[in-house]
Amino acid sequence: MKATSSAALLQHTAAILSPAQAIAFVVEHGVVLEASRRGAIASLADAIAGEALNGNWWSHPHNRSIFAATRAVRDCSDVLVCRLVDGKISFVHARLWPALARLANRFPAQRLARLKEIHSATGAHRVEEIPFPQWLPNETATQAQQLSDAQACAALAMLAESAGAA
Image (cartoon, rainbow, N blue to C red; front, top):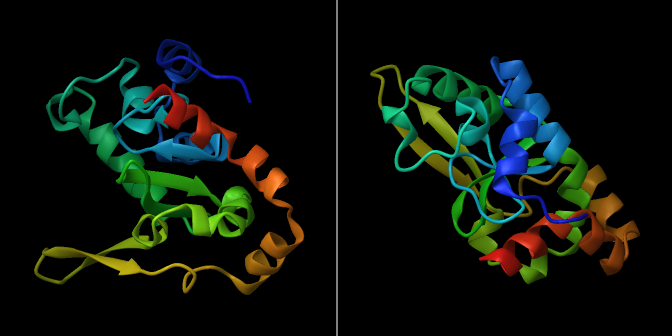
């Protein structure tokens, strides 16, 4: 995968208007950051805003759209919500889970924990962390064993590009 500039990512993705389009964005890119951007890793908040955001996205005119889209992605069963990239909220599509599992020993364990928001009846919420590999489906673990390290590295090339750009 060749490196992609933030401007190119924004030009390609500035039409995200719905939660379904936000999920499609994650499916297309494989690994997406919720709000930050790092090298070749796209930012969902930037894509929804149609521009590179500086500071907190809550102050942007599209903040409600960003919130709705990020919550839809967080609720999608085919998306792992974790802190994979630089400890930032990261979305990883299920098609990359076998590669991630194959290379799990190359990442800090806490970055592979599945994050799940739990909302109480009072409106309070907390974040629950499900450690890796407890969240990993058995079928995905089997697929991971069938991958070579080289295949897994190729599938997650955007992470290496991001690290190189940091």
